[in-house]
Length: 149
Ligand code: IDP
Ligand code: MG
Image (cartoon, rainbow, N blue to C red):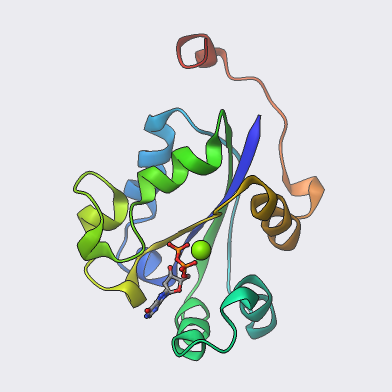
């Protein structure tokens, strides 16, 4: 099963949207195999967003992601990366389809509520960055008979 890293960003936490956001992924059928809340350090933020270093929005992005706690989640499922990205919606919330998290809860790119890995390779790297292997749980869900064929 493919895995992906999700972050509920500080605006999602502060706006009391942890529950509604987690529910979107749960209802999709994606399986939660890791979940924790943490205050992101400046160092972790810079490593996570290293690909964006030097862009005009980089420093505000670091400020944003370290401004309040985040909820980090590992989801597993068939094509979990793509499924989660589609549930999250386009980077710019105004362009995100209604029915997506960003399309339903957001307006501005610098307050877009959720991170989702953009490829299986990056997902594995990001999961290694955010979670110890001991924090990931391998378990069977009986409901999967009705979600996976
Ligand atoms: P993604 O989160 O949809 O994968 P990326 O292009 O990887 O989007 O950008 C990472 C994050 O950086 C975005 O989610 C958003 O919070 C922020 N960001 C991206 N582009 C801009 C911008 O033009 N202005 C402000 N913030 C931006
Ligand atoms: Mg990205």
